[in-house]
Image (cartoon, rainbow, N blue to C red; front, top):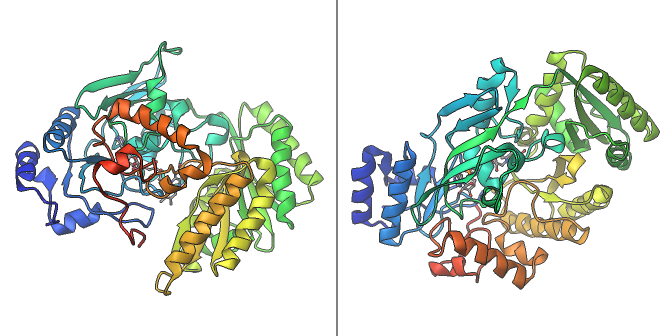
Length: 478
Ligand SMILES: Cc1cc2nc3c(=O)[nH]c(=O)nc-3n(C[C@H](O)[C@H](O)[C@H](O)COP(=O)(O)OP(=O)(O)OC[C@H]3O[C@@H](n4cnc5c(N)ncnc54)[C@H](O)[C@@H]3O)c2cc1C
C-alpha cells in the first residue's frame, strides 16, 4: 500500500465499485505510467462502468479532498495520465460501449473508453469512419483523444479531434453532470465543448462523447516520393500546399527512419533516399487524379527520384504499415526512445531538422525523424539505451533544446501530444506570466479546488501546482 493510502476512502470506493476499486501494489504499478517514460503512483484505481459511478467517485474524492485523474489507455506521451499528487485514478477502460450510431445525422454517441480504431472498424460496413487517426489508434481511447485534442496523419485535411466532436457529457470537478456543446451545426453561446477538448483531464471527466462521422472517400491514391536531399523533400511539402492542394495526409521520413522501417516491414521503401514523402489524396475520382498529377509535377520540380503510386489497396496498406510501425521499428537501433512533438512553420522544417540533428549529436544521441510534415508537426525520435549512465539527463537536455529551437523558429510547444507533466515547465518559453495566469483563471472556473489532474499543464508555482504542496518527483523520468 502507498504511504498516502486512506483506508476509509478505499472502503467507500470499494462499497461503491466492489472489486473495481483496487489498491494492490501490482495494480497500482500498472497505472503508474503512460507512454511518456514518466512515473508516479496512484493511491487507488477505480474502474467505473457508468456516468453515475464516475460522479460518485468524484464526490467521494471531494469529501476526502483527494485529487482524481481520468485515464484512458495510458498511451499519452506527455505524462498527462501519470498519477502525481496521490490521486485516485478513474480508468475508463470498462466504459467502452458505442451507444448509438445515427447514420442520417453522421453522429455516434460513444463512451470514453472506446478505442479509436474499434470505432472506425465498427463503422466500416456503414461506409463511415472517425477521422482523427493517431498512430496509436489501435489502442488509444476516444476519451484520451478528446482530452489531448489528438491528431493523426489524416488530420491535415480533416482537422484534429476538436473538429470531430459535437458534444461531450462531463462530470465536472464539483460532481455535476453536464453536457458541453450540442448536435446543432451552429451552437450558440460560449464554446465550452471546445474549451474542454485539449484540457488534459484538468476540467473534469468525459463520460459520453458525440463524435462526428466522416464518409469514407470514394477514391484514394497513395504516393511514395523519394528525394536524395531532405531539403528538396521539405520544399516539396510547402510547394504542394502552395498549389492549393490539401492532401488527406502528407508525411515525411528521414534517411534513418527509412532504413529502420524498411528493415522492419519490407514495404519497398528506398533505403538509399535521404527522405521520403508519403502523400495520400482522397475524394471524387476526377479530383484525385488531377491531384496526383499536381503532386507529380511539384515533386519533379523538386528533383524527386521515383514517384511510386500504390497500385491497389494491398500496396497502399503496405506503405502505411511502414509509417505506422515506425516507432516500433526503433527497437532495431536502440532499446529505448523518447518521442518529441513540436510544431514549426512549414518553411522552417529544414532549418529545424538540421538543428535537431546537431542537438542529438551534441548529446551523443541518435535522432530519427518521422513526422506530419504537411502541418509542420515535427516528431524527432531520440533513440538511446537507458542502461547507459547519465543518458536520461542527456535525453532531457536534448529535448529541451529541441523545444527551444522550435519556438525560436516561430513554432509551438506541442502539435498533438499535449503538455501534461512533460512540458508544463516549458510553458514559460511560449507564454507570459499573464497568459498563464489567464489560463489558470479559466481552469479555476471549472475546478476551483484544484482536484482534477493537479500538477499538469500549468507550471510549478501556479495555483493548481501548489495545492498539494507537491512537485513533480525528482527522477520521474524512468
Ligand atoms: C506509438 C504512439 C503513437 C502515437 N501517435 C500519436 C499521433 O499520431 N497523434 C497524437 O495526437 N497522439 C499520438 N500518440 C499519443 C496518444 O496516443 C494520444 O495522446 C491519445 O489520444 C491518448 O489516448 P489515451 O486513451 O491513451 O489517453 P491517456 O494517455 O490515458 O490520457 C491522456 C490524457 O487524457 C486525459 N483523459 C483520458 N481520458 C479522459 C476522460 N475520459 N476525460 C477527461 N480526461 C481524460 C488524461 O487525464 C490525460 O491527461 C501516440 C502514442 C504512442 C504511444
